[in-house]
Amino acid sequence: MDRRCCNCYKDLLPFMVLVGNECIITGVYTLFKAATLQGMSKYVFVAYSYTVSTILLLPFYFFYTRSVFRSRVVPKLSFSILFKIALLGVVGCSAQFLAYAGISYSSPTLSSAIGNLIPAFTFILAVICRMEKIAIKSRTTQAKVWGSIISISGAFIVTFYKGKSITITHNSSFFHLQQPNHILTSVDTNWAIGGLLLTVSNILLTIWFVAQVHFLFANIEIYNRYFTLKMCLVSDICKVDTDTIHVIS
Image 1 (cartoon, rainbow, N blue to C red):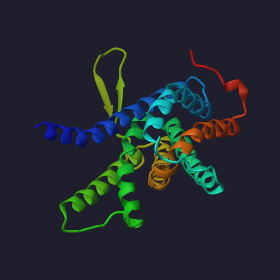
Image 2 (tube, rainbow, N blue to C red):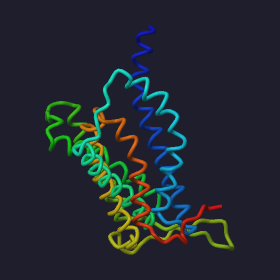
Image 3 (cartoon, one colour):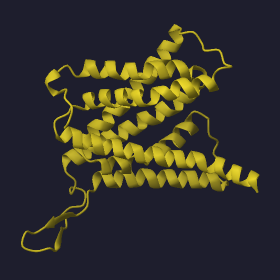
Image 4 (cartoon, rainbow, N blue to C red):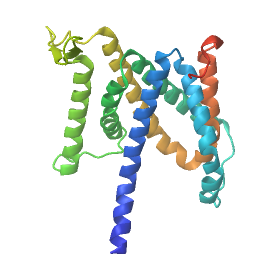
């Protein structure tokens, strides 16, 4: 019985972590939208968020990482490792900045909906890179294929069809739904641009996730040390207007 509970816990733990991760990402996107509406630059928000996360998570690095990797030899910082870190940094920074730019044009709700593209794109990229084998008769493969089709279709429907607008009259408590005249033209330009930027961001995130698998197992300590510094430097280079660097009160 104890062994079954232990196995069930191990199976549920990755699922719970991923659900928690999605909730945190949605919360960060909502905070970003609120901050940018008050005048904060997306580059400043990235620098602040990584600085705060470093302060909060740095103690775990010394207590957990040191105990886990105590028996392992940390590789020396070579040109090859620096190049891989820079490559991952370019892809990761581009994905995050595109995501924030897309939210600026649209909303956190659209970003959460289009975020469903990541599993579909990951499956497609894994098949292209021969990391995943397709067996047409397998139920698992069929579920992955249909899930990818549904995810991609749903994301593009949300992008190009905004739906009915809800208005509330001042003299009445009733809602009024305005039906758009043309389905394909019911979405405004900013909403479509935001959806496309978020789609490109998710494609880059998929590449970023797959590339990290080959790099982090051998160089996780070095990557953890330099990632925050890299993001802050990129934010400083992209945003030189110091008048917009302020804390939202």
